[in-house]
Length: 180
Image (cartoon, rainbow, N blue to C red; front, side, top):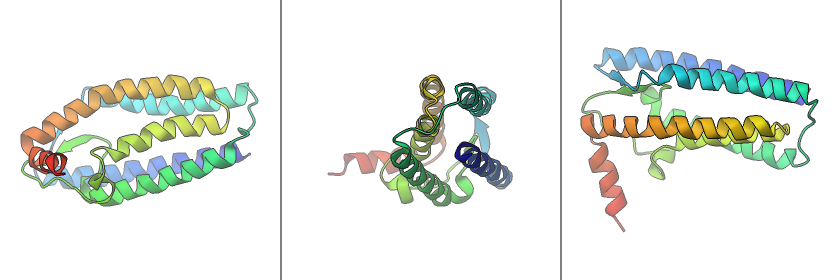
């Protein structure tokens, strides 16, 4: 029962994020933004939908119970969700599931973005690992962690190149990296 409750909450969260992303996309496009990496976006969406389908199938078919370490994994998962909300709030109207670039925009360097370049991707990596292992769905955790790493190995370089080419990304991050 706890599996279905958590699953429904996470799916509702994702649907809310899609609404936020669509609203932000509309605003950014109206400001002159453009999309990069559109060719891989459908694969990313398919991967995320497949993740939930595989998770459900594995948990149901294996009659998996919660992990013996469920309380620890669940607390970590809650912390990751707090980090996700912090990421979304920190980026504000710039947060999106697509790579949208607003030329000459000032790169957001607050919240978790003060500490790392892509905290939202770290959140996704942790979720794809934690959610399945809370319910002993190890096949899903392993396979989708590998798929997600592969996806990010394509996505992050595209995003960083676009940000470097069109915003102050180089200045903001090179300055921060070179400071002692």
